[in-house]
Amino acid sequence: MAHQDAAFQQCINPTCAATYAVDQTLVACRSCGGLLDIRYDWKKLPVPKNLNFFEHRWSTKGTEAEGRADFSGVWRFRELLPFYRDESEIVTIGEGRTVLQQADLLARQLGMKPGTLMLQYEGLNPSGSFKDNGMTAAFTHARMVGAAKVACASTGNTSASLAMFASLAEMRGIVFIGSGKISFGKLSQALDYGALTLQINGDFDDCLRRIREVAADAKNGIYLMNSVNPFRLEGQKSIMYRVLEARDWVSPDWVIVPGGNLGNCSAFGKAFMELKELGLIKKVPRLAIINAAGANTLHELVNHQNLKWNGGKYDVSLVQRHYAALDEANYKPHTVASAIEIGRPVNLAKALRALDVMNGVVREVTDGEILEHRAMVARWGFGCEPASAASVGGLHKLLDEKVIRPDESVVCILTGHELKDPQATVNYHIGDGPKGKLSNRPVPVEDDLNAIIRAMGN
Ligand code: F0G
Image 1 (tube, rainbow, N blue to C red):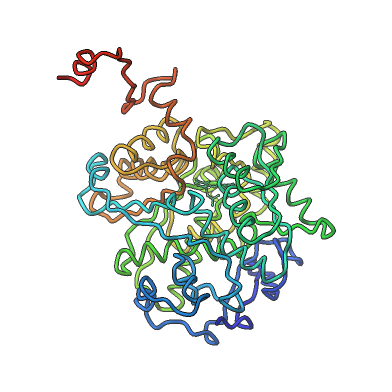
Image 2: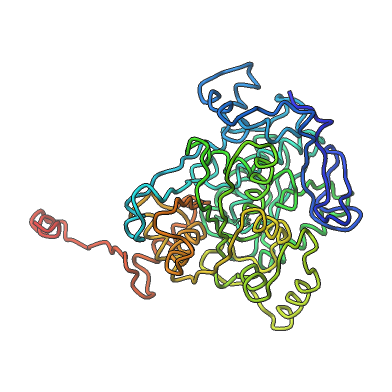
């Protein structure tokens, strides 16, 4: 049982810091328009004294609702996201049972020592991406407030996850996707799970702007599921809890994550902010956020314009000037990693905070680097979609730059399953473009035994 009176929403802008009850449905501060956090008065809450507490839940079964919560890789950490009233409200489909794999073969390719590189396979979630971690939390909140229609704009994974949870929670799911901007695996999921799928003639940034307009008008009765919804990010914190758990609660030196709308990295920052505050960990890992070069707003602002969190008083006018210049140049983000093809990341401010909390860095990787590293993860791991491989491409770059040493412990977050975007994989291997280092063409053979045996190299 959670203590809902100890949870509240709060504007992250320190000069505003307005608070709201958790049963309100908000996607921005009413007073200043800033992003909202879910905050807790930990003193009133039953927080475990140490993180080992959570381990027994792998094997225990409580009452029906508690047992289902224990089974979830998100809710077995529920004392660290206690915004709900009662376990029976939790909307779960067994998300978050993902693995951290020690990737020595890939480490060798990158010149790292054995035992140093770990891959967190979030593609093993029910809908095939890390988004399920956040959706279970936001749907739990949606159920708490009695929402009937839920919607999001998406580059694909959020829409797949939303559609799956909407069906589970018996709510109407509506997804806005950019026309021609979504991989087939993801589109097929939204359709299959029964969501109303609107293909807007524009890109992700256009879709998000529109859905926010629609959701802002209460008479449309829309509960917004994009990561401006602070409850989403509460669920996404659990990725870091699982990483820590798999490492016996010892922080790695680095966590590397692709950056799109910057919700995931923001959630990681919040997770460590809270664990530190609660005295539950000794060391906070460093964070690397990796943009695609074709959608590199964060990289531009942080590395070329020196944008910093600055205790929450970051230079908003600098961001506005940057966006105005992008508009002036009619800039549209473009990358083969369609999941992170985003020009105006809505969680920018929270990502700056995460960089501050985790002493982070930002890098960009080209489409070529993304495709080569995606192929490497498949060849020496068990695969991920292009956007996810930005993390490994970023690691490679940071090793080359000697920002990361080959003996440091590194966790790369692989956000989506390889089968989300089979087209990208097939193009790499047999497409007309330049041959990849690991391109592996099928060999045509006559239906003849000798020819087949010859083709097998015998
Ligand atoms: N990796 C994948 C596979 C994604 O689908 C996304 C985001 C990201 C990384 C970036 O995460 O936005 O938290 O920085 N996909 C969103 C979507 C935008 O609509 O599915 P982020």
